[in-house]
Length: 443
Picture 1 (cartoon, one colour):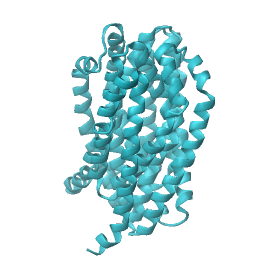
Picture 2 (spheres, rainbow, N blue to C red):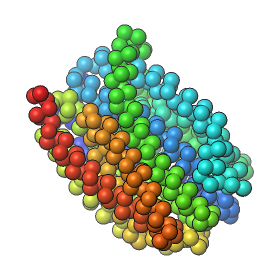
Picture 3 (cartoon, one colour):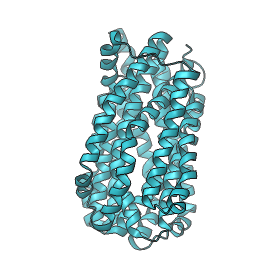
Picture 4 (tube, rainbow, N blue to C red):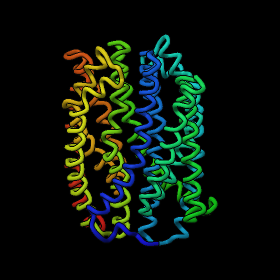
């Protein structure tokens, strides 16, 4: 099995992997944005607020799935770098079983606590009712999403960026086609959006399982003889990776709760921005999934100079990408306000974000890159510590005092400052760690 990232241009590998993944992610993020657009046509501000509240909880479940996928990609990429295909097949089979056993109880717990979780976020009245009706349909499909993302992680670990892209692209296309049919054709409203999401996850899983089992034959039946060892190695990365990703929704949920004190319009504006963000900055989310396998294969091959080059080229990519994305948002400010029929605080938040606050993603991109490296350099707990610091110490007090100073916009200004501090700290720590790798290998 060829470890393709151990040779050739690092920048080319980064661009090939990232742009391929970006296309798939764009389809999913665009569908999320269209969900908000279709629902805004129904003329009920509580619908947008409900999506904001529901999105905060779904972000927890999605982040857990991402953490499981990151760990899958990291462990499998190390195995690919070692060159033993039979061992890799057994490893993938064991990991898929672990993910099933882990995600199903989490899904059941989330359903059981749903009303209480929404209440903690400040949802009430009509917005609470709508958020619940959406969540009870989407939440049961969480294990499907976790397995589909793990399959995507296996593809990225092997360097099959296009197939990982197709997996997410299929989900986006299915959702985009079914959304207006269920929302308007069947008159299901927000429940129709939820049903379309479930169908898209089925489609992603079906294609992902076909890729790893039939096309590439990368899965063997779970092997009890190596299950315990594989589970130990997997959870050494998976637990920190999940906590790393789960810390972000903690910050998002806190911001949503603080925003709720300014009313449904502010929450709706925040929800609209949360749909614009991933679409505009999809390349950064894709980059974080590309950096890991590149670093993982080179770590397995003990090519430490290429890991340092991966960090440098990734940071350059973040800067150039954000320059383009922020300029596009600047140009599209008023059209976005008009498309979503935003008024009051919602319109004000969108304008502030597009006119400058979106540049916070430079520092968010730095954090994505460095956390991906930490997860693949066997210091995943560093990524956990950095993300929890960002979600708590560098979000909560900044958002709270920002709200006191400048209302809904002040919340965003506060989180910007916190993101800048933690992003720069992560870059310094990543450089320090990578330069120590040769010395650690000798020891």
